[in-house]
Amino acid sequence: MSRSISAVCRNITPSATLRLNAIVNEKRAQGLDIIGMGAGEPDFPTPAAICAAAKQAIDTGKTKYTAANGIPELRKAVGAHVNRLYGLTYGPNEVIIGTGAKQVLMEALIAILDPGDEVILPAPCWLSYPEMIRMAGGVPAMVLTTAQQGFLPSMQALSDAITPRTKAILINTPNNPTGAVWGENLLREVAQLAVQHDLFIISDEIYETLVFSGARHVPIATLGDEVFERTITISGWSKAYAMTGWRLGYALGPKDVINAMGAYQSHATGNPNSIAQYAALEALQGPQDSVEDMRLAFERRRDLMLELSSGIPGIACAPPQGAFYVLMNIQGLVGKRYQGQEIRNDEDFTELLLEHKLVSVVSGTPFCAPNCVRLSYAIADDTIREAMRRIAEFVKELT
Image (cartoon, rainbow, N blue to C red; front, side):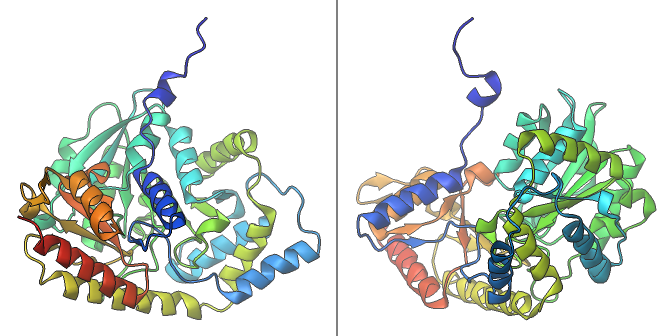
């Protein structure tokens, strides 16, 4: 028997965003003035009341193992939270708490997929989705969208992607990286398709609080009993409460799926961090002012970034309705040169921009968005101004 890495791990592509963050941190350690527009996390501190709850948990000895699927009071609080916001009713056994939304999403895929099962995946999409589906033994069935479509799939394209091996549709609204928000009419059509073909729906709603310009977040699970019973909803605390490093997320769904996820989690990781769970309890039950304050700040920053990008020749930005990213199309710059170096694609653009102007953006190719780059506006207003000034300067110097 050879000592080789498994086929599953040999075929995993490392996260482009995490790799970029490592490069940025290394350059900053060298004293370089890097502007990072790649991070998918709020720049705000975690609200003080949440931090105080974590400290209290430590001081009162709540530092032991908990139930593998999360403390009962937090699972109950999650159910109460979504009931208050959306009128949905989940019992504690239909909720699981995990180490980040990413973990519970991975567990959901493992719980429902057998080898070769297909998951319909509209794209552009978060770069981890295809890899996670493959790691769970499934096959991503990509349905490409364009800026002209508002990055929303047509029902014909979704229907055409269904085969006898299709097991689920994975949707993400508000979307990373496009900022698209799926409207109720489109969601109803997707729901009807899932019911008609007896498919699971996995709905990643981690950016649910971050919607702009009158857009409204509609959980697909609210669209009828037949939809509710087949939907696995993914969310958490990272984006709404600026708690990315606390690593806590949750899933809501059918009891049998949640039980399967809990069984897997009990062996894979055990319980999520006990202290973070008590902090998350305060986040849901305490003051919610900070959630709206952050949303308003992100909307202002979005508008600023769109305004500053509008005067840069060769690029185009579709206005996002949610999340905190702008997907910038750089097709008009492909073929140009910077100091003799040709920009052949989005990866060349990101490398040259970082090298010469010290601005880090994420290549669109890993998100299934070739010749685009993703810019995060989860940074201060003045930092956005300076970043866009450098990008404009970079483009002006192209030949």
